[in-house]
Length: 118
View 1 (cartoon, helix red, strand yellow):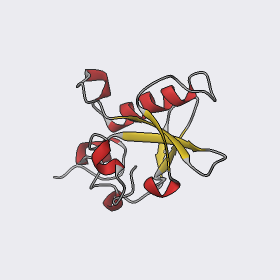
View 2: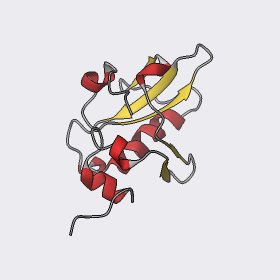
View 3: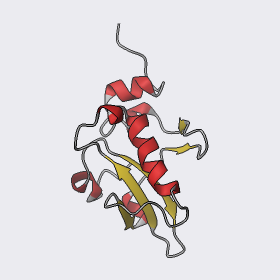
């Protein structure tokens, strides 16, 4: 996810899923999905992450040709977890309280990071 002081916080749609790999230059090549068009199959954070990962892995290492890709300074993003390239299973390694400013509560519940109220 973007660092809270990164320009990505305003450049990307709020709640966008970001995946990336380090480059030899020290930058990170990110692929992101914010579902700005409102696609029904990309409403959950996990679905957006899978879409972004699919772009990154398509024709690896070149990736899918898309506007939703950028090479950024490593200080602009925070690693919050890992996604399995074969199963697209997401493992979040960061506490939910550190994610809630970017990832919606329903998605934190879906990812098993918090319990539903009640």
